[in-house]
Structures are given as C-alpha cells and as structure tokens.
Image 1 (cartoon, rainbow, N blue to C red):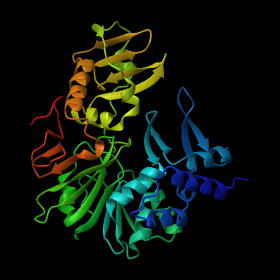
Image 2: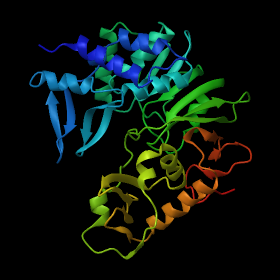
Image 3: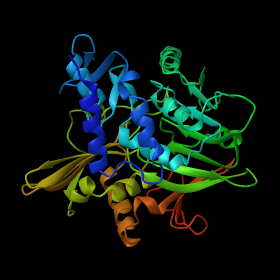
Image 4: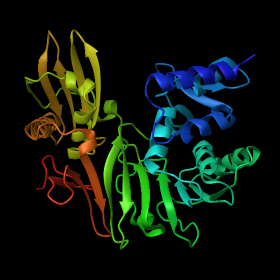
Length: 381
C-alpha cells in the first residue's frame, strides 16, 4: 500500500536541507502541510523514459505515481501533454513556495491567479487569505478548470475558478491586492497592472527562466520590481514551443566553424550567466552536457538557426548553421556580462508601462536596459 506520510516527511526534510522553506513566509510550510500535494495531483502523470513521455497511472503504478508527486524540492510533476510535449504540470515545491514568498501575501488579501492547473497553488493561496472567495483563479483549459474546481471543493477551499484567457479575461470589477501567474509570459500583460490596486504586487514567471515581482506604482501607470529566482516554466496556453533542436539542426553540415576559445563550464554552473544570456537573447535556448572533462552546449532559436559549442579535451570548436550566428551572439552577450562585473540574477529588474517593458540591471532609471520584447544582443543603453 502506498504510504504518503513518509514521502511527505522526506520531502519536507529535503526542503529544509536545501534551504527552500522561506524564513519570511513561514505560513507556506504550514499550508503545504495542511494541503497534501497528492490530493491535487491527477490520476495520470507523465515521465520521460529516454525516448518519449510515458504515462504513469495511479491505479496501475501507485508507488511510481506517488514517487513522482513527492519526487524532490526541485522536481515538477508533469500532468498533461499536448502534441507529445508537456503542457501543464504541478510546479516543483521549492518554486511554488518561493513564488508565494515573493508575493508577500497577507490574510484578507484579494488575489487573482492566472493558470489554475491542478488547483494546488490556488488552494495554498486560499489557505492563507481566508474564506469568502478572496481568490479568483482563471484557467484557459475548461477541463482542467472543472477538475481543479472539484478538488478545491473537496478540500473545503473557497476559490472562484473561471475559464478564460488570463491575458485578457476580466475576472470581476474590484481591483486585486495580489496577482500571480503560474505560467511564463514573454511580456507582462498590461491588463494585469490595470486589475491591481496601487501598491499591489504582481509575481510572474518571465520567459520560462526566472520570475519577477512587480509593485504597482501609486498612480497605477507603471509597475516595477526585481527578479526573484531562476527556474523554467510552461508557456501560456496556445503559445508555440517552436521547433525542436533536431528539426532546426537537420542533417546537413554546419555553415561555419571556428575555434571556440572559451570554457563552457559556467553555462552549467552559473545561474546568473544563464539569466543574463536569456535577457540578451530571449529566443535562444541553451542546453548543456558534461563530456570528456568539459562541456558541450547546444543552441537554437526554435526557427532556423543553431550552434554546437564544444569545450572538451578533444574538441574546442563552435559549429553554426542557419541565418543567425548564435555562437557569436552568445559570445557578445557573455563578454558584456563579464565587462559589467558579472551582475547576479537578483541585480536584474523589470519595469512595465502601458507602452513599453524593459529589463534593467542594478538601476531602473540609469540601466543598462533592454526592451523586454525584442532585446538586442547588447544593451540599448
């Protein structure tokens, strides 16, 4: 028989050992304890078997299913596939509590959540703010919304679950004290700022790598704040994931090759470098693997350009193909980051207005900064 109590204890202890429970928000640990994760997980999860995603059904494989639900502090549980790719998940527990901590949530707050998913995050919000349907959650997928609504009701939690597009839905007339998105956006919809009170806090993943916490200005005409952490997130429903590396790369030879002349180990070890490259090159996806006492990196833009970077004992080369030279673009952005004394992830921030969005480093007024929509490889200022 599957025992959840021991798994829950191990996960809580692992969160403690990793320093994942936020000191500023002890309520998050209490809420996670009060609302077991498995009560909100669907009957079918998905796991990568090395070739494709395989189904893990609770009735057929109860132990494996439970292991996926309580895998570890940094492990999400994939709950839905679309066209063979993950399209919904229960976020990793460490990320969930980190984002809730960034929200600075208090009892009595009125909260808007974008992306209900399984309903677990909405439940944690409701546990904190209290009854009276102070939490409104918007879900694009009607079937997901129905199942989440049922789970929340079974847990005796008062959450209003609506079906709609989180970027455009008008969930009620009263402004919100807090807004949180559980999916990644490339640009923060201005509607979210318009829904919020002056002084309200908005927490959202940005570009599937990291999340930002914005505070709405007193006049309601802008929102600004700092990056809070590094993690990958699902994109908004309906947003194309683009072509896979294999589709972009094809089988032909590279268009160009040159000596690399750079140690790639920071690409695996330095989250601030990864984030800086994401800011400068938002459409470039980077994956790495250790090999032969070094690192190999694969880059692609999801369209037509790719590069393979090899920094090993037997190979020190950059191979590139397509209309862009992604290895050269990464080199330029990396060199800029080094010249700026290697700013950390937490030294980046974002400002949103009705007409523009910019990401800046260290100073929201003086920059350097990038337009958040189509950033160049080097800062605009």
